[in-house]
Image 1 (cartoon, rainbow, N blue to C red):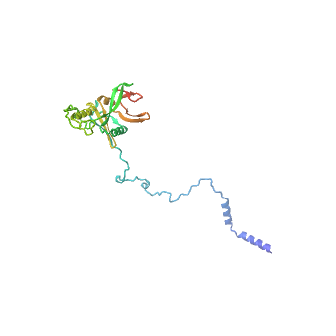
Image 2: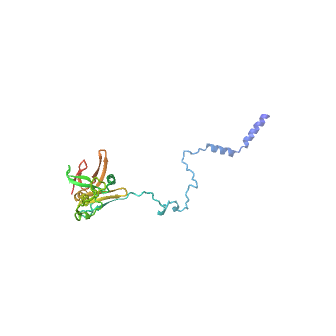
Image 3: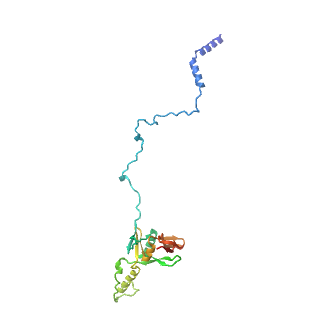
Length: 259
């Protein structure tokens, strides 16, 4: 009796299960999902652009910054100038004959002026015949007058008579120089500056230097640079970048000139 009742209950439960639920489960389980296919990813609404939005809203516009709001943090460069302070000369086409003095050469001349305690110290550059290439340049230090002008060559220095004065011994530090010694010193200062010389001055905030050339030397070295080179074997002033030189020697002091 008990067995029959249990059988009837199981059969009743089986018969009460709806067939639509069973068929739906079987259909879902047996349906294959196409994972191997490239299914499109869902598009989120906040990523998609609005079709009605104006086009210019998506164009980046450059910022307009006034010049008043800009600050320039650049340090001012050192000011320098090379001027002809005495007897400028011109070429056949009317242009001025010039040379260039590098800052290294100007700084070295400034050091020599301080070392010798001579503010009138200058560098004289002369071109002479000789050397292995026909011409060579020679450099030396000279003293220029304190006030350079054409008046130095307008008339001969006045030679006045010497008068006796007390304490004229050369060993006496309080000796008063006579008028003849004064005129002699002026004559020697003028001799370092010749009438056909041209003086170039390098003027900057840090240094001041003078270079002297005669008319022939300037014509042979116009457009060149005066530099100061420091090497293991020594240091010296040199002429570089001479546009008139056709060839030069390995020593750097002899060259050939194209006139």
